[in-house]
Each structure stands twice: as structure tokens, then as C-alpha cells.
Length: 179
Image 1 (tube, helix red, strand yellow):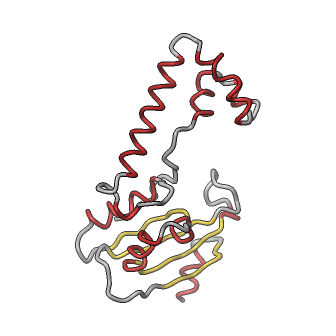
Image 2 (tube, one colour):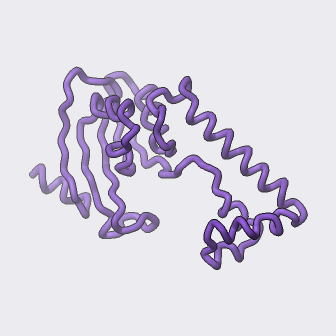
Image 3 (tube, rainbow, N blue to C red):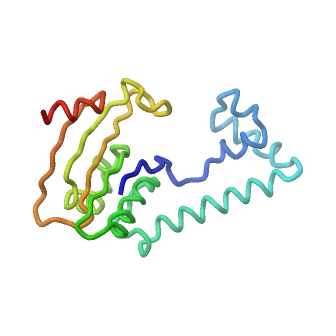
């Protein structure tokens, strides 16, 4: 399998929802207190409260599903991000002995509560190529954002062993290192 899953935190984005109803909240770069002060006025508009509650219910439902131990036992205690949810699903659905390659943020490697997930990662990790977005390979994340190409075995190994190259700016450097 090959993928670039979404790097999206699973949470309710109140400023975003209110900004959809009242776009001026986006334009001003409103702070949390500003949004809080305008919430009541914005939600009095026709249909606004229903849209707000619908978004809230959907976000809470997603959080409940992704944080449920029976659905994602490897993610217990960590900040849920959709790319983290993809990892155990790929390993479970991939062919035994197969390989998965995923481009994702580095949060799985430094989350203080992510020990369970990290243990599963290191049992499967074949290669970790860490990049800094300095060359703006991706437009949206800040140029300081670190991300990596990670190649995993779908089946855990008895021994932790993987290739690692860090502080990369361009993918061509990986090939050059192996040459």
C-alpha cells in the first residue's frame, strides 16, 4: 500500500464553523475571546444553530469513534490525528509479508503518550526518511514542518532494524545517499 493520509486533528473547530456562518470572523483573524463574544449573535441567525450543532455532533461522533479502544487500541491516550488512524488499518488490511509506504507528520515519534503506537511502528519500520518542508514540497504546512516517508512491513518483526536519513530537503537526496 502507498499513501499520504490527511494530517488532520480530530476535533471540533468552533472558529471554523462560526466562520462559515459569518465569514468576517475569518478575515479578522479573530482570537478565541472574539469568537466567544460573537458566538451568541452569530447563532441567532436563521439556520445557524442547527448547522453549528450538526457540525458539533459530527465532530464528537468522529472523536468517539477514533478514540474508542476497541476501534484503535494502539492510539490510546494520544492526540488523534487521521494519519495515525491509517497506520493500524493499513497493517491490518495489507497482505501478510507485504509493505506499506506512508508520508506523514513526525508526531508519532515524539508524542509523550504514544509509546504503544511507537512500539508497533518500530516493530514494522523498514525505513524512515525525515524531511523539513524548507523547499515547500507541500504548500500548506509551514516551511519548518517535519514530515517523513515511512516504509513499514505489514507484519511485525522480532528485531527492530531500519534505515534512517534525516534533515532532508529533497526526495532525490535519499537515492543519492544509497548510491
